[in-house]
Amino acid sequence: QVQLVESGGGVVQPGGSLRLSCEASGFAFGSFGMHWVRQAPGKGLEWLAFIQYDGDKKYEAVSVKGRFTISRDNSENTLFLQMSDLRPEDTATYYCAKESGPGIGVAGPFDHWGQGTLVTVTS
Amino acid sequence: DIQLTQSPSFLSASVGDRVTITCRASQDISVYLAWYQQKPQTAPKLLVFAASTLQSGVPSRFSAYGSGTEFTLTINSLQPEDFATYYCQQLKSHSLITFGQGTRLDIK
Image 1 (tube, each protein chain N blue to C red):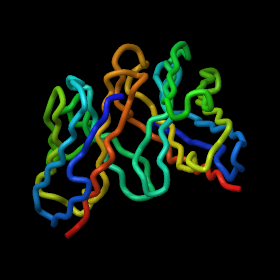
Image 2 (cartoon, each protein chain N blue to C red; image 1 turned 90 degrees about the vertical axis):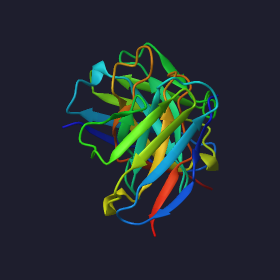
Image 3 (cartoon, chains in turn purple, yellow; image 1 turned 180 degrees about the vertical axis):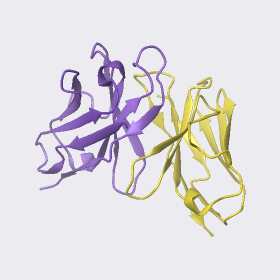
Image 4 (tube, each protein chain N blue to C red; image 1 turned 60 degrees about the horizontal axis):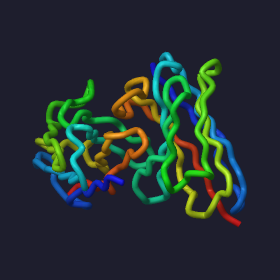
């Protein structure tokens, strides 16, 4: 069965960096678009970033552009989110999510999600 | 950005009730809309895609409708496991994916 397992969260000071990982199994990882979504405590869902199946196209939300970078290693079935210049407002649970298709053309729905990893930005 | 506005933000209902949640888009998104259910401390779960197609395994008491700028999610005969928060999501472009603010459905 499809599994997505995030790791790399933790407590970091403002201005610091973190790299989140999402290890995928149970499906052909290299054939699907992938996303990162976050949820601040008690708040709604915020889409952060997308990467096409082959890594050729990437997009980040305006709120994190220039600070967060999405990448993937299809040989290791792993998705990454490199986060830098972290701010208290980046405190959230970060989810990776699998798109239903390769990420070409119109976006597909997110049919599988990881359990999330908590990032806390505090001094 | 394409904004999604859900109404109501909070809904109180009883087991057996029928409820409807509305999601309005700030511009035409055709049928590029999905609905998710999220229970506390768990990841969201896909319920509906392409505005009206139920994801495999989703009970038939859920139904969804809409196109363009107005969309609805209806739950007939509410079950205890349906009390959760529901989000709509627009998927018109990979570079501009957005979620609605959420509708929390509580037991009356």
